Amino acid sequence: MDIKENIENILSEIPDNVLLVAVSKTKPVEDILEAYEIGIRNFGENKVQELVDKYDKLPKDISWHLIGSLQTNKVKYIVGKVTLIHSLSSIKLLEKIELEYGKKGMVADVLIQVNIGREASKSGALEEDLDGLIQAVERCENVKVKGIMVIIPKGNDDENRYYFKKSFEIFKELKNNIYKNISMEILSMGMTHDYKIAIEEGSNLIRIGTGIFGAR
Image (tube, rainbow, N blue to C red; front, top):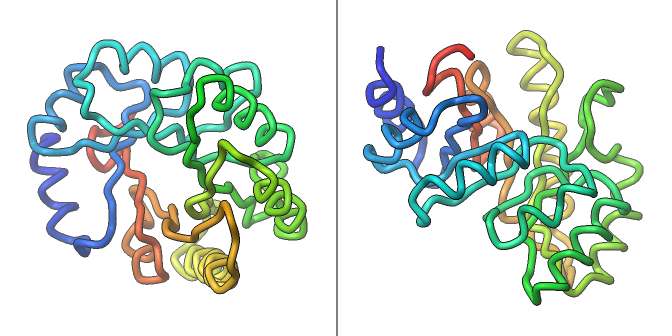
């Protein structure tokens, strides 16, 4: 099965209100162009250097999503290149994004990454740290939070559903509050093997790599 077929199959299965981000990390420019020709405009990268390299080589109407953890010393390289940063995980990173985007008079659209499974191996804010992070966002001039992103622990369908439900509850609770710099528009959850359950539980942005481009 090829990239075109994979994309057509996924698009036929997901509702119109769900955004498909094609995770193109480690994939060559040729593969991205193949997906682009079919109409995909949202691509996700994990590493800043790879994203910047591809940004320079590919059409400028592509919306780039930084879905990997972002180091503070790399923020300056993505200003003006990234449509959405999925991985705001700490006040320290927030302050760096605010500083670097402020220098260019630009606004960063970000998602708060929540470490929903409390895994030491994953980045993301713990649930109890969200209030402090949100208060810090409210003091910013150059950062707007558009929603939350989660990477759930590996598990079976029931376990996956549990974490997706839990994430949706956090999303819903934040959505009910009124903020200056925060609007809960995007719930980014679900990947190749669990996106159907994620959508059932409220996801409106799915990140699919292997299901489009094949195994890395």
